[in-house]
Image 1 (tube, rainbow, N blue to C red):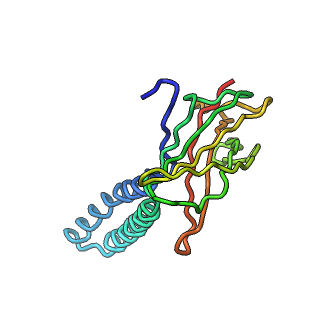
Image 2: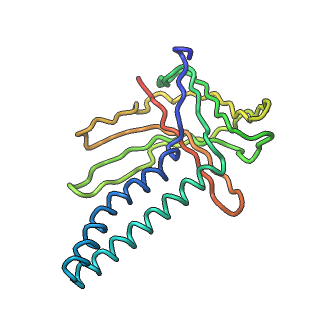
Image 3: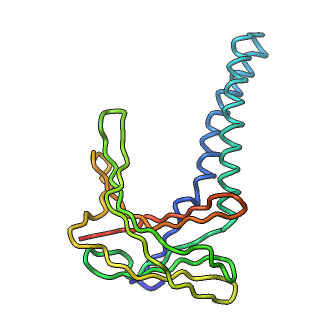
Amino acid sequence: MDEFKSVINSEEKNQGKGIQIFSMIFAIPAISLFYSAISEQSLGSLFGAIGFSLFVALMYGIGFFQKKKYNKLGATPLTLTPSFCTIGSEFSGSIEIPRTQFNKVKDLSITSWKYTKITNDSYQFEKVWESTITPTIKYKKNKTMLEFIFTIPEGSKPSYNGFFSKNKHHWEVSFEFVESMENIKRSWRIPVKI
């Protein structure tokens, strides 16, 4: 791969898998409560096991739905040139969509997000800045390329994701469209530096 380019997978790629893995973690207490209910003939353990099992089934179903929704469009990598965006400098990107003659995306959104920790258990996402651009659509053999050029405006904040920071900042390229009465969204976090 060219060192001046970077390929970024969409944020939605692993959401369904993550939710299903999260649900499987709760399957462990459900199994142990079922075992306890059977061995000790405890009605309380049985109700607890049923509650955990319903939660596991619900979360697994949500994860399955998210994976199915993701697979409607498939993998859509974003290629950035250069490999990161510099404030005030032009960068280009292309999004590869594995469909021929795909023309449902009319514009792309570039957004700056701020994630603020308000109290110990309270967080807030705030949209700091947003702009839309119209991509150039190019058709190749069995795929469609959405190509765009953009400049992050002067005075903007760079990406910052410090682990213990109360204020985190990230930039995102995204699009949305409706297909078969479902809202399909793709978003990519892009690195922005000073």
